[in-house]
Length: 103
Image 1: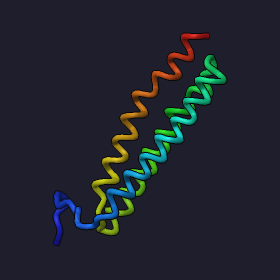
Image 2: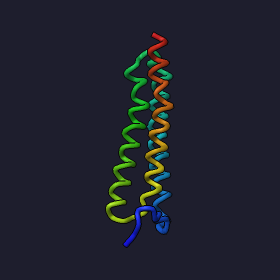
Image 3: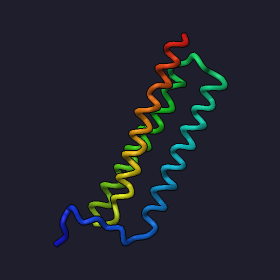
């Protein structure tokens, strides 16, 4: 019987998959921010796309965490990825706020 506090870091590819996932989500959010900064600085809707991408990415990471946990796999890296993306989403909530102030 395994305990819930037991962390399974014995599968080497899990951290790399989670890191690549975070990198891709952050890159897509960066492209969305570049589009906002270059074309539509006053649009709150376009500015809201950046934190929305990070929110969806965080939820996706937590979904992967749950699936790996149910399969008794190496889930802690994916949980860390989810928390990182949600934290970055909270920081990026200032972008729509800046767009509201500029109009």
